[in-house]
Image 1 (cartoon, helix red, strand yellow):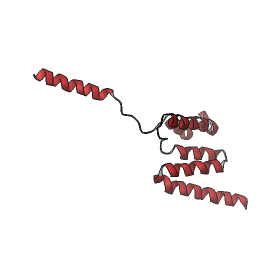
Image 2 (cartoon, helix red, strand yellow):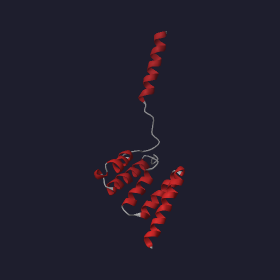
Image 3 (cartoon, helix red, strand yellow):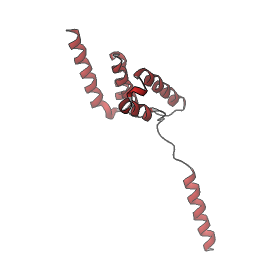
Image 4 (cartoon, helix red, strand yellow):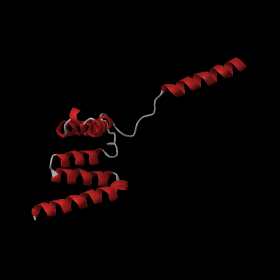
Length: 122
């Protein structure tokens, strides 16, 4: 009897370990692109990163998974590096919309962008 109970616990334990939890987000190459942006910028230009990250967004949508937090903001920063303030603002607003907890940071970035745009006009 003890052998049967012990073998049942072992079987349940093995079955529990075999199934990996499903991720809420489709991370794709986002962590790698973030690493490249900050630690090895010479290995991936902003335009290359933009192409890869926008492809990751499409993959996530196709799998019905959420885009990870920060990806839209990261894209916004990449567009700022390319002097495309309009596209950067769109991604910052999208980050704020999808992840309301980022509102304070996104509002500050948008406000700083508006100040810089106004200074450039004068």
